Length: 85
View 1 (cartoon, rainbow, N blue to C red):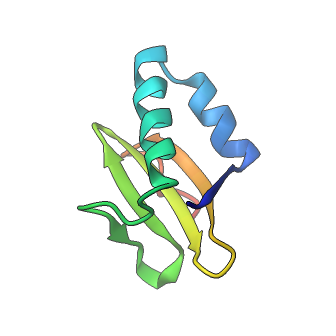
View 2 (tube, helix red, strand yellow):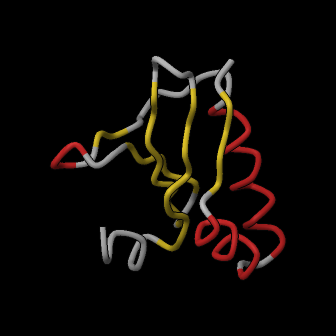
């Protein structure tokens, strides 16, 4: 099982979302602990991490297989989440 870490900016983004959306995203994040590369996961170009889709929102994260850690880098709507990566 992998340990999950949310960056402060990702936590703030989750807190700003509608409660129904943030609940779905939290559930998807928790599921990453047991399966870090679920079906339909995409590797980001340039090796900057992975992303999964949850409705219109995206979760961008990195995986450290040696330390068995997952860092949630960014969470947001699909139109905004890739800016600044």
